[in-house]
Image (cartoon, rainbow, N blue to C red; front, top):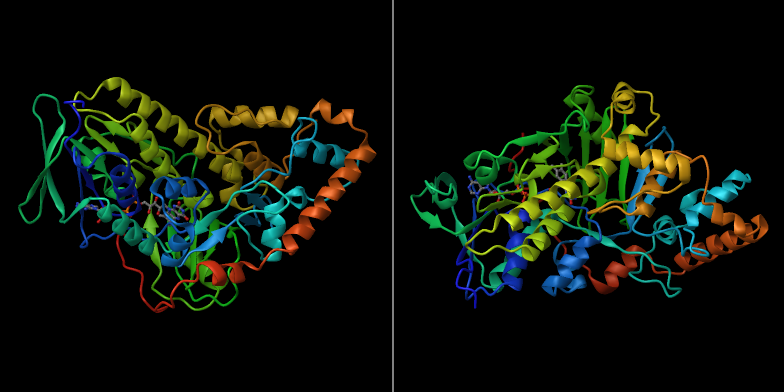
Length: 510
Ligand SMILES: Cc1cc2nc3c(=O)[nH]c(=O)nc-3n(C[C@H](O)[C@H](O)[C@H](O)COP(=O)(O)OP(=O)(O)OC[C@H]3O[C@@H](n4cnc5c(N)ncnc54)[C@H](O)[C@@H]3O)c2cc1C
């Protein structure tokens, strides 16, 4: 046994980040040796948004041993195969970013190169036609696996408030101690600068040797107490506000998230079992709050279930994700707009990385530096992916023109240059989005490379054409034979009827 092991971990904040960290740490470390305490304030509340996920959440659930159907049932969840982008690029454009590739590689060459070859020869089926999840989404069907062995992944939509509650139950059952209280002060060690104790409004003190800041935008420990500077990316990601507005559901739930571009931003629609999650993200420099709200209300499915809630944010991150004896997770460490549902993904990656580089009371700086290096790279890669959605757009309005004309990060420029010249996407370390995701966004926005992989010419055009047509037809037929998404939910994970009029708790509403 290591004598220097941590004795007291204190997690401050009980939103998604706090409870996700608490549950997985309690599962993976010996809570007889290291006590885990989570402090949260009902008075402040959690943000209560963040309802669409990507497949990495399944890895997190698996690590916890969570039963997928029980999880979906208890969070009023539905299944997600990807994101449908409407009016991005140009008005009336539609493309689908699925959690899959475009079918198996042929002779070691990715399928999109054969699509480019067909396109050059004037055979213009959209690239989405070679995506099995796209056909499922289009048919409104869902299955977690395909009998024909086509590879794809799925994720979930869920009620964020129910999700935090679900994880709280899991974490407490694993031994996490919950304290209700509001932080008002922090005591630091005079010599090391480490956080020693946090003081709560009722006078209680909670001591720890390691702190995890999950206080959301407040960033009470990492930002305020440790004064970790913020790296501001708002010159690249111009949107700085969002409005969320849940509504009744009037149609069967789609097995995908929908993102629709508008004059000054974009709106989301997330189908849950008991309601729809809706919202709009926009840039206050180009769009007034009233115009954004009006656009959101006009597109709303069903009737509103709560007052609209406005959020203000600045894209970017704390210069150090881990500073002294404190790691920030979730909004406390940074913010990227939810265009690709990356908030919860970044939380999962942060917790797993923390477990991999877990400190003892010596706090070897090598671990901290490595954690910060990977976290920064990971965040920059996701940032680039999101910027690409904006900078590739050919929409005419001022926001989109500004995005098109701005200087993009060198790392993104490099990716786009290589793509334009070769039809390949160069990937580095800590890339959350692999080549098929980039292909979906690049081709979806009409960015056609000047050539395709030369190896695709080994097969004659007729053979490629016939093979791709077979692939397209079999994908469509296989997808159409699957059960409707709603029927799949009803059969495996139907949630109890909920009080649809229950208002969403207001928290950090601006
Ligand atoms: C509009 C919008 C839409 C989003 N959509 C998605 C999405 O579709 N998919 C996705 O993956 N992510 C999404 N996100 C991101 C996602 O919501 C967050 O990643 C997630 O909710 C994590 O939040 P958090 O736990 O960091 O912060 P919060 O939920 O804000 O939790 C902060 C916690 O800290 C506590 N706290 C704060 N100050 C104190 C104090 N002084 N004392 C004690 N406790 C304190 C609060 O009480 C609360 O418990 C979205 C974000 C926004 C803004």
